[in-house]
Length: 205
Image 1 (cartoon, one colour):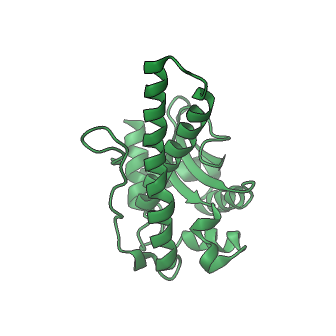
Image 2 (cartoon, helix red, strand yellow; image 1 turned 90 degrees about the horizontal axis):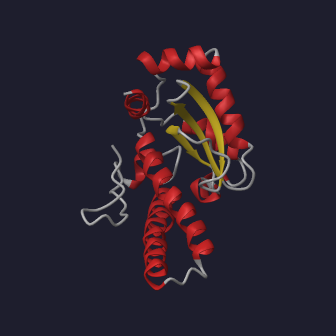
């Protein structure tokens, strides 16, 4: 579903699935342009650099910097993966979930409104930078709302991200400044619920 690498296996960023201004007025075109070109693209490049450094370490037997590059790979590759999902989660259409996903949300959280309130609250209160997430845990067959600090902390093993809300300041600060909760509530006007449902179906297959 997500294109993360090119034919050679190098991490690469797929084209945005919409023009820069497609998310107006919720997210301004300049924010989308800067976010995609100067935050997402460099993450993929940095993940490649970290992997190359680890190959050199194995070949040379010099692991003096292995701790640094393992951390770098975890951070940058997670950023690349999460951003790829984030862009596909947005469409400018909005609406509400339907079908099996809607039923699962109601069963797990009590109602769509309770789920939304939970996800917005969790995302708003992420310490410093990170993500809010709706994920599916296949081992327990449960939907979960999670916080993620940075790109790789506080997540739970085995949870497949279905819907991601980026709360790094670069995702919203040009338009919303410090009004993170306002940005998050407005994001629900441009969620691509068809994409979220497709991810939910795939995670259960």
